[in-house]
Length: 112
Length: 115
Image 1 (cartoon, helix red, strand yellow):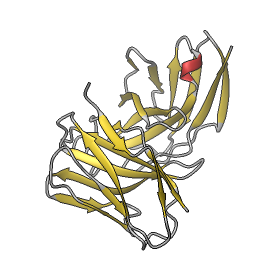
Image 2 (cartoon, chains in turn brown, yellow):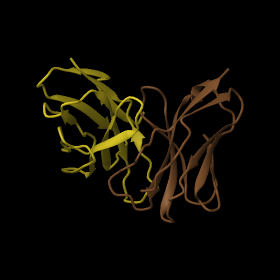
Image 3 (cartoon, each protein chain N blue to C red):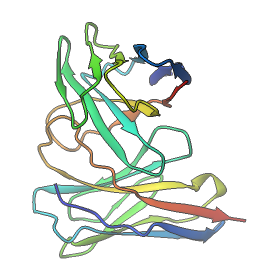
């Protein structure tokens, strides 16, 4: 599975957009990009995923570069409840056994 | 509400003792998983099960055992052979089809500590 690189931590002002980058330069054509987040002492929560097109749902937007070597998760109007660790994960299209490889993620702090 | 229930929230183990962590889901998912998380680290896969009465080892299965007698239940036993059991344990499930677009749904976790 491709490895991902994320900044260790980021700050964001409440109400502003939070842009979380992820580098996955070794991604292959049959691998999706997934984002999960984990609020302290809770289980991770699915946010969004994509293959090569940009995606948007009620929680966030995912922008994937044309060469697919990096992506950005956008929380359009961050709130204090968005403070969490955000994980960028790459998975093959046909994944055996739920083997999500969670790296260290980005700790996002949303401040008033 | 549909979801995954893990119990207990906190568990203490004495030296040489086996302990069992409970995981129940009412999402009608075929696949269930156990992960371990150490402080400041990502998740590591212990065991997973894609169907009742079948399960496979993950990356760190040594010192752990599981069973899958019912679709909705996937208990994890931390045996005395696991020498460093203190960690946050997470159970997850998915409507596994083998394709990567399935989402994992996680429980709220069990914090296991050694006395």
